[in-house]
Length: 94
Image (cartoon, rainbow, N blue to C red; front, side, top):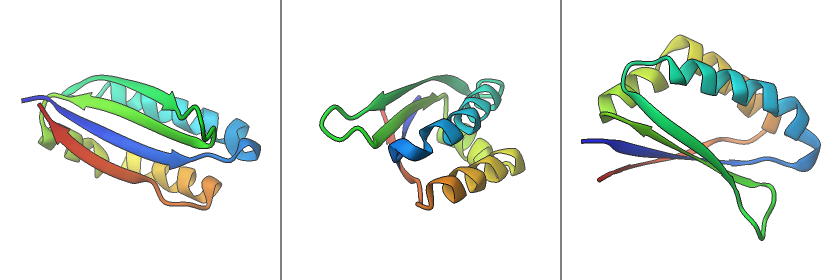
């Protein structure tokens, strides 16, 4: 059963340019992982700093393997250091 991962970040305007290459690398790596289906990034209309990525995976185990992989952890640490904030995750199933 497919799962959707909601990944929420607060991205201040002055950090967006520095963050973009990290997020692009993260997406490219994710696309090559077993179980990856798709993802989309949304920006909140009434609060431009709020972003959510909706990532779809075949199983929660596929997501967890990617989420705990050394490559992802390294990039995620760089993202959080750039933002000086934690990323929030929520997992949903169909």
